[in-house]
Amino acid sequence: MFHTNEVIETIEMIDKEHLDIRTVTMGISLLPCIRENAEKTAEAVYERVIGRAERLVPTAEKLSREYGIPIVNKRVSVTPVSLITAAFPEESGKIALALDRAADALGIDFLGGYSALVHKATAEYEEKFLSTIPEALSSTKKLCSSVNVGSSRSGINMDAVRKVGELVKETARLTAAEGGIGCAKFVAFCNAVEDNPFMAGAFHGVGEADTVINVGVSGPGVVQHALSFAPEADLTEAAELIKRTAFKITRVGQLIAKEAAKRLGVSFGVVDLSLAPTPARGDSVAHILEELGLERVGGHGTTAALAMLNDAVKKGGVMASSRVGGLSGAFIPVSEDIGMIEAAEKGAISLEKLEAMTCVCSVGLDMIAIPGDTPASTISAILADEAAIGMINHKTTAMRVIPAPGKKVGDRVDFGGLLGHAPVMAVHAGSAERFIARGGILPAPIHSFKN
Image (tube, rainbow, N blue to C red; front, side, top):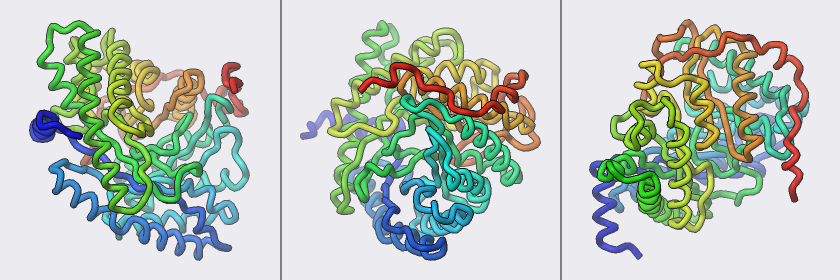
């Protein structure tokens, strides 16, 4: 039951504080599409995605008009493609083209799931599939890809970590004319979740229902606006204010998620509570942290402030939705957050500080431009560090970096739209090549054997 004052508050949040539904994502199982060869599988994949998601965009647009709530993105996620192309992994690119063609026909923004789960070992067919990722990302416009390289129970597959560094470099080379934008459509995880509605890491897990709707809400501007009215509040009071605000934001997401699932005749999956920023001013996670009292994000106190924000968002959100999932917390992508962009341009935040921040927030190093000549082994080492944080702390961590071809520290890369722009940030000069070349499995911590 929604009360009048809640409706008024929601209208205010939408009108002045950038509240929106960041994405309505339909997850679709592709397991019924497996055929005896790549051509027939690709045809079945296209027909299934079109058949299941043909009403996704018009339904979301109708809901947006009826409720007056902006729904920014309409997306689809599918079963990790490596699972349906095991018999013909070298031809997985045909599935990539079919999925991109379906995404274009549906009018959705992105389609995720050109993915592989190699957190414990890399089978021969998965090794071949991984090699197709750069070409798949460079030859498609809306397709997104992800690889899960580790988990808290299995440890970290360092052979896969090494491979990821190489494929990121190759993807950057193949999309050099666009600033390496192919890398913006790829993310590597530790502890990847099966119900994430956000790109580029969304895929439809094998433990999910046949077809589901997952919704990602967003409201950094709403949280910042609320805090601006309590400049003298102590941090306990600030946390309570954030919790109450997150509750209101999540109620909107719950409403849209359940109604979209009902109208589409599919299962309601989860509401993802993540505060997802955009390059627009007034829609920044970094500015929330500065509203709490930091002169500039990246300074001392940033990690503590982010930890409090992330925890308060989760505590407030779980009370507002019957199903909370996905990643749920606060994203800190550099190119997609105007506050992060400004901090990076001024040298106030570094790659090392961002890594520290990922210990306490959602996901990890996200949308960070690095010099184009960064070695593949260094990219792999950055991923290894992120994966280790996730493995030890039983949380999802990830890496999405763009080695911008021809760019050096201080240059700028423009990606456009929600992907924004980013200053090229410095990486550590020390080589990790010998470390990465060792390969093998980085063992899981002993507490992973709890049952």
